[in-house]
Length: 62
Image 1 (tube, rainbow, N blue to C red):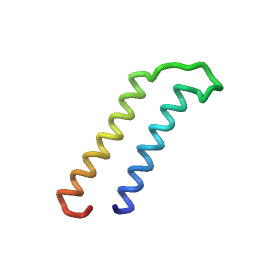
Image 2 (cartoon, helix red, strand yellow):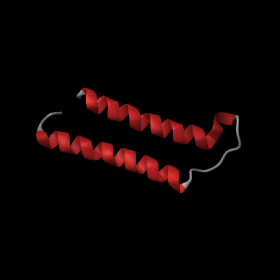
Image 3 (cartoon, rainbow, N blue to C red):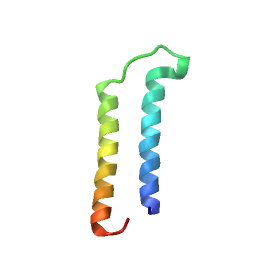
Image 4 (cartoon, rainbow, N blue to C red):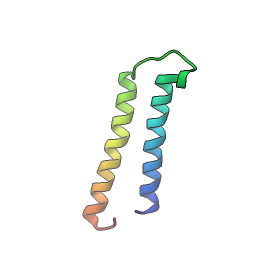
């Protein structure tokens, strides 16, 4: 994979970790379930990453 793809993977994983840590508090805060804003943010980031991968694979650059 190209450098841009690895950056996209890192950003998606960072957003996912931030949402999970923010919800669970890692035992240091009160647990709350993921909110709609969290789902939307995670869904958009992973969806755009998947679209990016499909576009690159069709272009033959993966």
